[in-house]
Length: 112
Image 1: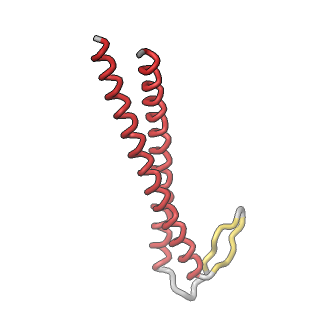
Image 2: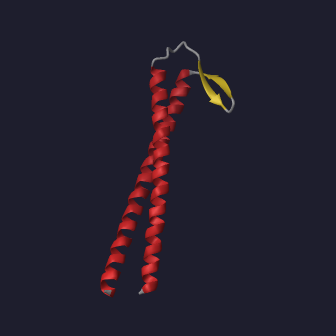
Image 3: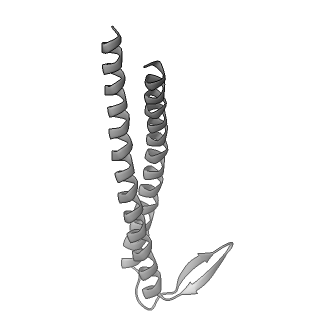
């Protein structure tokens, strides 16, 4: 019984650690998404005849506006997918941690 309780507790602790990691990752992806959205919004005001530059390492390369917008759209779609996947993982680990806590409570009650 003691061994089972320690295994459940380890699982709960592991899930809580995973939750913290996932929450940090979600926050980072949401920040990146916000930056991309702001960049796209700024590009809406740029005329088609204006020069647009994209960063390439330490230098900037002249690009056409359509390709920059397409790249931003693809990046935002990828970030949204990543956030959605991370949210599913978050839900899983929240459920796992909650279930582990409930099992530990039941074990403690049965011992008492």
